[in-house]
Length: 321
Image 1 (cartoon, rainbow, N blue to C red):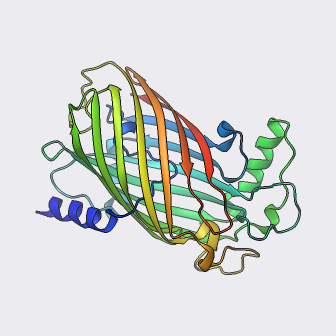
Image 2: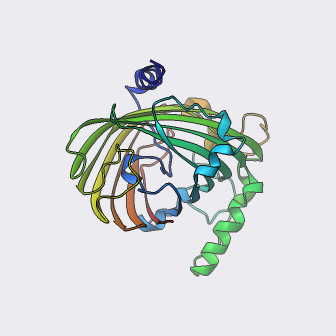
């Protein structure tokens, strides 16, 4: 009964919209058949020959049963009837306007912003219901303390690109505390060569307030991500995935500034925020024994009134042990 409540509550709220995390590590198409693994993911819009908006994202992820004992893990809802994996992650996210060459505020453009976030998560599988549930607690900071200016400056220096200007006008320091609850439900497919799934997600806190929902599919040769077994029947997996989502946006601190610190020199007004956005993702994934590799391309519609559509790419490398 509790499991049905969690799935129904999330799905009802999200059925008309969706927004994914920029770096998704709990989705079925990113499943690693191991209870212990380390994974590195890197997003950057230079994969699509751009350098603006969601400019860069880095995630270091560690999964281990011992994380269940972590004090923050105890704050995560964990419906009964699921087989869980527990993990922690470190996220660094950077956002810039359409030009990094000006020393002045670019009004009607996106503000500079950066975040550093510690993520604690639990991802569960209910084999009988062919359903996945995940919960995450994100805690960190948005603002200069996240070192976005230093990271982007060094990357531009390594690539021998012009150094960025304008970071002095970035979103000011503020606390990040955010919860994420999500679910994925198998709709059709044989489980090893094709799957189509419905998904829904809620994010709430000081960084993002939004609800999300949509669909994804996996096609190729893979181990069923809705089966509890950690013993891989297929030592080599190779498949393609696609995902489409719609998002209802309540608040976004990376554009509107922190909730507690309202001293940011430039933010996007609430009336100019796009309350509904759409995102599409597609990628290829190869798992060889306990080594995971993926390449992804993503597309997002306008996030604010005077904004542009945006694309970026990402790569992941994971190792199970």
